[in-house]
Length: 144
Image (cartoon, rainbow, N blue to C red):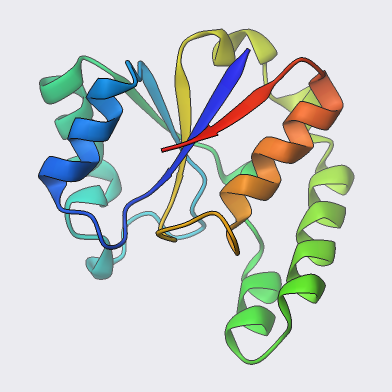
């Protein structure tokens, strides 16, 4: 199984939807804590759901169980280290037991995890995909 990841920052709508189309994405899983921010532009939840359906025939789901908490995100944004964030976020996923709450079969449709970061170096979408890969086995992460 493959789990794709994408961030929308530093991408135009044309680039973003073009990447999703080129990779045959059927389902976008929004793992942002705040999916309706004015800063999100074309990726505000209601707009994104419409664009995915109309442009790609793909579905949209917001999955807050894969989002960090306000406390974890706030600590990082206010000077916390990446390693502290990573540790706290991975602990949260273990505590939530997301691997048993999410249906693996949903990811058999070509799915992409969405957040805002332009790259996966310091991004929770990479951590979420790695966590699911470790928990479910036989999962390959593809960053687009």
